[in-house]
Image 1 (cartoon, helix red, strand yellow):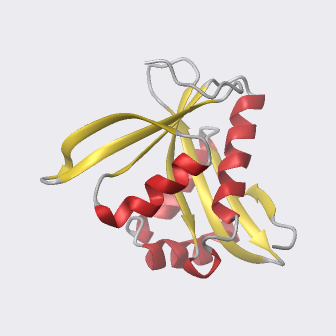
Image 2 (image 1 turned 60 degrees about the horizontal axis):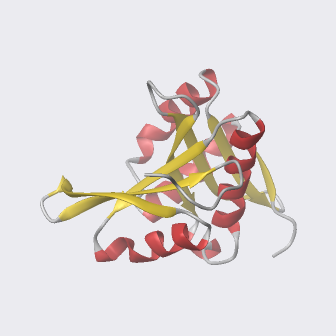
Amino acid sequence: MQHLEISKIRPDDLPPLGSIIRDTDLFPPEMLADLVAEGQAEGHVCLTARLQGDILGFVLAQPEPLTDGTWNMRALAVAPSSQARGVGKALVAAAEKTLSEAQHRLLLVDTSGTSDFSKTRAFYRAVGYHKVAEIEDFWREGDAKITFAKVLNGSDQVRL
């Protein structure tokens, strides 16, 4: 893949990001503007990936309340036509670098335990995240919440 540009989400990024959300069925697209505005106002990680000006994906991360240096990657989406090309990996790496440089220590990500999300779980394992929790019937009956974590100081293990 050619040089991917990772930068903070800009207001004019919202329409193409809304299309990515719709295409990936991540969450209702009408939620995006408020999530980004709130995140940017509070200093959260709100990054987008571009290739030759085209928006390919984004990542949003925010601090976990009542913790010291623990963050949660709330959203990661890549346009279906750009998946499996390193865009998601680059976005996660940029979020991790941003948080590491600010001396934050742990990044979590929650996903579904259904078979529809097996590729998502495999992706997080491939980029160095470890499964640390599973809550049965969390999202709905038969759909567990799977939590992955990565220590940001370079360690490859999460202490439980």
